Image (cartoon, rainbow, N blue to C red; front, top):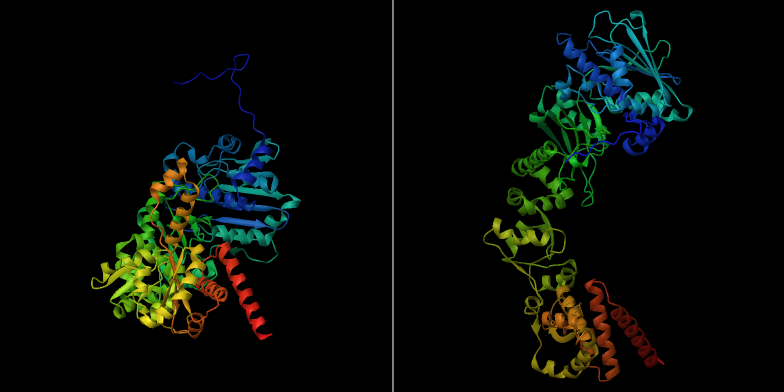
Length: 615
């Protein structure tokens, strides 16, 4: 259903009134990231005008039409040899906000050839100047007169027709008189730098001049991008691509990956970072559209797992947003992202197959990125899982090497559990992998897919304690009184106490306690506290027999042998608490407040006992 448009009181329609100053403020604070974009917009308009001129004169020689930048501190000028504007065009396109000349009759069907699509670019000049002066002459009509347009920041403008001699050749010149507070963006050196920044890959010749007497204009884009040039050898091409990547990004790439998607007119390179980056940090990529720099922070061009590369690309068919500072998320961008991801996978596969030295350096820096990819990509898993480094009881090594030594690979579910058992498991001959890091637990369990002869199992307390040697019956009986006192002292922590022998002998005790067991005990305690209510009934139904922690004392340790012989009950309890606290500290897990209190109290009690004995 369409509602009728409300009429004004006298029945006549009224036009919207636009406050140009307010609109410019909106653009500067919410659409464009910086006033510097004014030069990009002027360059873009010039490029689109040249594209239209080329459509009118397809047989013109290459380089016949170009763009000239000028800045001397008092004015900024951008001149092009493009299609130009007639007086009717000026009224239609320069005086109507949002109306783009790319919608004009005769070229609307060619809009895909143009960078700009939104018809608001010229307004960006009001970010640095209060007046815009445009002098243009149309190439569509022979002997067309020149047309002058002056736009002001208050929303007013004037148009007048001038003799053809005012501009002998077709094209457009835009002149800005900068405000005093915009020198940061309009001084000559900055205009030159911005020209290179935005236009270094433009296909049309762009030059810059600062009006210095006798100084020749300098080229802003003296040569094409390296991927668009030919080289005598593959090696010289690779070196040129790497040098370009270093110039753009400021680091020497570990390697460069050429990117070429003809379907969307995309070319460029991905530079492999030589050092690791924090997981999840996504570096921005430089994206050019038809040669014009669109964004330096376009992280949407690659999937999240590809944080080991930075890209610079130039594309024909990607759509910029209205601000032309990012890419429009559509099916084309999604397809490009998938295709570029496939190029990165192919590079990893080639390195694995033909360049183990490069692969080793890559994995040393970026194993986390590859692990995240291997979790979801069976081909990468098959190629690289044996090469990926893991933390194990044999040190940092690959699963391939580790599986050769240990028939059964045990894996912990957390870093904390690995640190608890690593030294003792190693002394017992157990092969344990730290599965607590991101992706590691899942990847280790997939090892049999690559090595069918390998066996993988989760490490649980029973597996470890089964490899600890029991003490003889006489020793067990002699220590029984001490063990009973120790169990009573540690009952508050749901901790049992046992006496075993294990290596290394320097370890007095081992605290075996998983994170899941602690959570279960916490839930059981909460259920007991909530007995009788609805919440208590629910928790009671979920309650299981809470697994207890276990403090395993090492009979081979001299300190433990001395402790189990203590016949003074209070001192025995204190020594058991101290052994528990020391084992909890060695596990490197977060301590509960009661455990911190116990560690402090047992230390002070032992210190007081020692002082009394010496006095």
